Image (cartoon, rainbow, N blue to C red; front, top):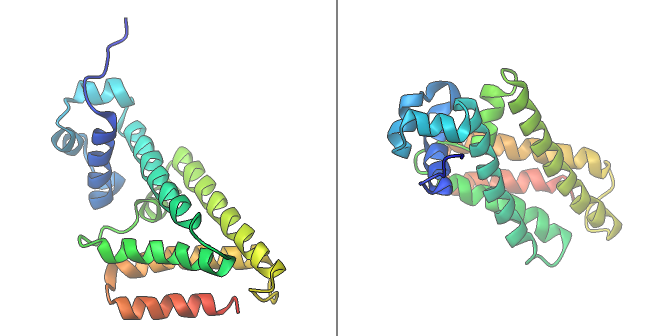
Length: 193
């Protein structure tokens, strides 16, 4: 008979997210995970398999939280210009609230792990593809509605905006000046008009 988990999996993932976000994958030890989750090693191994196993669940947990934030706010938008602004506004809010300067776990993970672990590479690549497709769809609709220019294709703009979002996340680790970051966002979005 399989053992039943006697802990709140979401709470464990939340705590593991914090330590991975703070120290990175390579900087986080199994002892760190034991300390932060209050689980013993055997519970972690039985429930997640290994450090990479818990890390992959953490990435999914973190990504789902971001996806829900985007979906919740995008539903409230009235047009494509608002939708693009909301994506950047959510990102900017996250940067400004990141008092510990941890950055985005997905962006951090991409720079640290994407070329080390095939499973991580696949995960971040799928996340990138999904995000670019969402942005491309918004841009395409905006171009059809004549809100955005057609100097470049929706696909080209989407890749540019996704890359800009990642750069904004990295910049936000070092720069918390809201006015400067908002000016940066305005300059990024200016290309669409």
